[in-house]
Image 1 (spheres, rainbow, N blue to C red):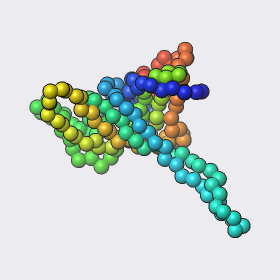
Image 2 (image 1 turned 120 degrees about the vertical axis):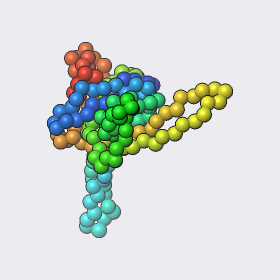
Image 3 (image 1 turned 90 degrees about the vertical axis):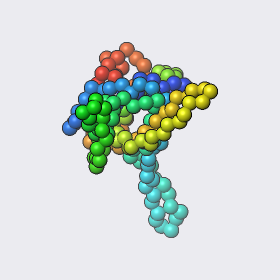
Image 4 (image 1 turned 135 degrees about the vertical axis):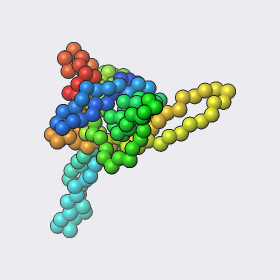
Length: 175
């Protein structure tokens, strides 16, 4: 599988994990960027008075961020544990647990590719607001994310565009 050119991001979804399965994915409209850096450790062997030699590099997860134009109320409730208020809004509560989820998205390129990352945990995002000036620009929210392998050892699933049922149903369930 080659993805030599990547020039677009679309269809960002998240799916909350319950036990060993995931809920139906929900959209995160307004996705601007997904930035994930592999986290790895290198096994080094030294012996017989020789120069240390790197023998294996193991990727055990990813760390990065999701940049989005805005977060829907469902995301605040599902991921951050916000609760409904009597006034119709939502209230942030002190929470010590991070909800596990998957993220699914599509990148345009050669070929168009769908991605699913398992065992994701979103961190708290910063809040910033600016006054309008002569021109209006959309403020974005950067949400930190950490990804580890699921209990089967899976980190991610990548599927280039094809006619399979898995590709057609990608955003209906975590594959």
